Length: 412
Image (cartoon, rainbow, N blue to C red; front, side, top):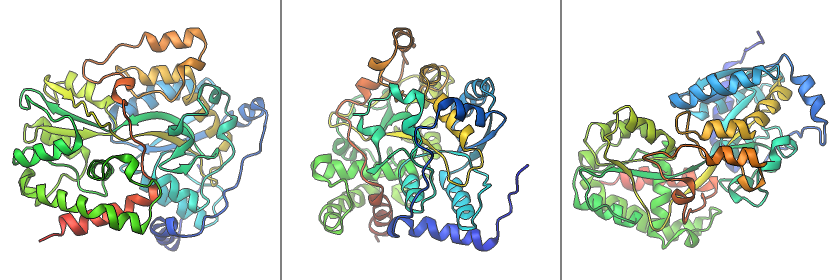
């Protein structure tokens, strides 16, 4: 077992890095050897154990990694050890502490990451770069797909490998909401007209945070009216209307807006218990199972939003402190393979949307995607992502989260 010794000073420093990295000058990230023969990578990876740190609150995701990805990696001579975390920031704290301590035998080999966490690591020079473009299965990923070339506005530049796509999605109980709204602004109006039947998680929870960004788009005249890169002038111009509208509807929210669910799990529980009529998620794949197992009512439907919702992609990143970089590359490439992407896209397995361009696949692999069963709850990705809106850069996230707490939650 490798050493896991970290000083309290290192841990404290890592917390500071998480707060300040986005405003600090970017550190240079070490790059993997370019054009390294893949056979050499496979040979170096054999016998390695890859610690995959990932959000542990998704049972279907856990089962996919344990029952599908891990056995396939074992056939390549690599052991995958899933390390569940309550929040990706837990993984970030560990790897940044190890980097601050000068560790080159770290405990994190691969991280399921995106958004501000990727940007934080990039600013700190914590990610290995220049490797993902050389993965054999990247040939099936379109180099013109903006969702996989940028991560919340931060260029990927070979520092992470795409894993699956996501689309922010609202769901409602059609037995209780017979005339659902068709726009995000209309949803806010619905909440105000139906006291106690709507709420959203409190930022900085991931789902609550994206809801605020979605509302910003809706109340600013559309995504094209909000600069992707954060700027004080744009913030000062656009957010007053956002804070005013969210503050206006607060008294009509569940528990009169005095408290909010802490996360999506808590919101889902309220929806399942019939206390609210809407829930929301960046991972709509979970809706299928929640209906099938009776947690959510059979009348659960996905809200069709005419103006579109925010979409992004999730990635796998390798820390520079990983001692098992070859193994991590092999696992990332395996996760990107058509076979694994088909298995992960199956609604009976996990139901995540593929990052592959099926037009680039061999005929057999393309047909495997065509044979996937349709979800009775979640529309196909092409339909769900119609009029999809891009994520704002990660530099917007913290100002919006802090602004919401100050201007909405903290308003008398």
